[in-house]
Length: 103
Image 1 (cartoon, rainbow, N blue to C red):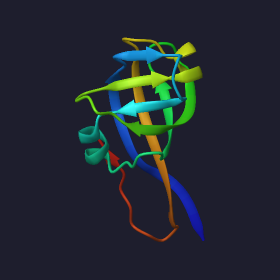
Image 2: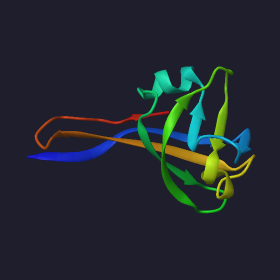
Image 3: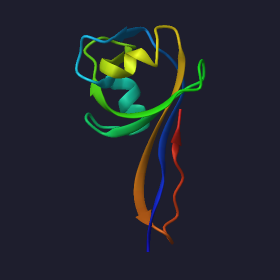
Image 4: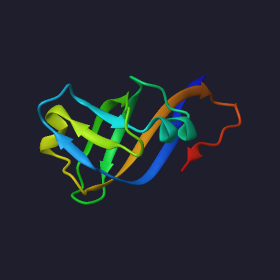
């Protein structure tokens, strides 16, 4: 039997840009993505510690180091300087030993 598990969790990112005039997504620094084992266009949850909003979207790779940007409609719910967690999930066999990447 297959189960869905937390694959990666990035804790306490600060949003440096929030832009409604953009394709809907979360833009992340490639180094952060690499450390967390995430890929461009991968679906993720964005949990906002500042205001309690929780949404899902996908990741785009930033060309700017240390960039954390919320784009499109999500920018109405997540603002510059908000603190967020990003969670990604994966499917594994229920008997598989697994531990998520947490950074």
